[in-house]
Every structure is written in C-alpha cells, then in structure tokens.
Image (cartoon, rainbow, N blue to C red; front, side, top):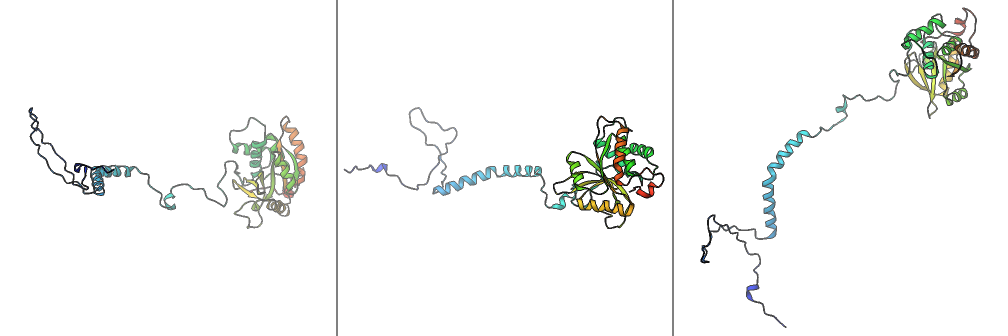
Length: 304
C-alpha cells in the first residue's frame, strides 16, 4: 500500500542558513501582534566541511596569541641541551689507564730511605692491635725508624720488629715470590710485605734498568689474577701479575743481595716481644742476619 506524503514534509537540501539577530529593546504587544524584529542575514558555509574550517579558524584566532605568550615564557625555563662532548669540559671526568694519582690508602714515604717504616704503618693499620700511637702517620714512621734502624734503610728483621711493635706479626716468609703462599695468605685475609727492585714496581721506571731494594705491600688479588701492590715510593697502587712480582723479587736478589716476602697477620693476645721473637726468626728467609755493620752491604737496605 502506498502512503502519500504531504508536500510540506519535503526538505530542501543544502539551503543557506539565516541567523536572526534581535534588536535590543524590541518587544511584542499584548494583543498578540508582534513587530517584526530587525535581522541581519549571515550566510553560513554551504556544506559541512566549510563549517568545520570556519570553526577551526575561529579557535586559532582566539587562542593563538595566548599560545604564543605561553610558549615564549616556557622556552626561557627549558634546560639547555648539551650539544657535544666539548660542553662537558668543565666536568671532572676520571681518566682511564695509566697510574692513578695518590691513593688515600697508600702511605707515601717521607724520606729517601723510610719505605720500610711506611710499610710497617700500613700493615699495622690493617692488621695491628696496638692502641696509643703518635697523632700522625709521619710521626709514627719517624718513631719506628728512630727506634729500629740507623736511618739508612730497613732490613727484613728490622721490618719484622716494626710490624710487631704495630701489633701485627710476621707468620711466614719466602726468599722468592711464592704464589701459593701469597694466595693462601690473602684467602685468610692476610697481607704481605715484599722486598723488590724499586723500578720493577714503578710503571714510570720499569724500563729504566736497575733500581734500588725497596719495600712494598701486597694486600689483594682481583678476578684476573692481578695483585694489588701498594708502593710507598710513589704513593700509588698498581696491579701486577705473579710473573711480574717474581721478576721484581728476583731482580732484588740479583742486584741488591736480598728479596722475598713476609706474610703479615693479626696476632691478638700476644706481646710485642713474642711477636718480634717469632717474626725475626721467620724473616731470615729473606737474607736477614744479626751480623753487625755488615748487614747493610749484605742485605741492601732499601730506599725509594
């Protein structure tokens, strides 16, 4: 069945829209007859796309100025970007490779021949148990040197006595660099004093030929098998493998008639006399002797 539609229901497509603007003050009469308001015809966009574009333009005009103002203000507060490495020139960046600067854990000797007392102080600090001491490391070094040496270096026996005075004890010794002995000592938290040729432990002098007999400490080993050697001559810590330390000790024997290693450990509950007696006997492996004035020539007292 067909239902006829009234012509008034037919809508004309895409007709221009007319907005009506009412004039202020215009009003209708009480009789129901109204005065026709004044209108200003405004032609709307002819399609939906045009209407959307007009709306976007309106929003851009309304908020454009505000956006520009906010952008200018915020730009001033944005952090500056680092454009290249050169911009970091004011920063202190640690250097890689080469000898490090003086380490606070390495006590540097203060005289030409007091590396022995410097080693004794370092080992005493790590392994010692004594209490009252002079107020500074320098005073301790001077006191040890004055009490146990003649001021011209330190023999292995004299170093053992210094270590005993500082509350630790020499427990083992070897006239060579004994890798197993060293590793076993480090495994139980021991340390070692090692008598070497000074040039063999100084990266800046390793090719300079013969050095002088010199005391250093070994107090650790890394995963690569390198030992931590603390050198009071330079005030620095260096890494050396077993072969390099063997060479340093062998050179000390061939050039200075003495060399080797003293294992140093804690000795709680003992007296200084007991520690000195036992340590002195063990230290003879490094060429120590109770001989009088001849021991300086025989055992090449060390210096830096």
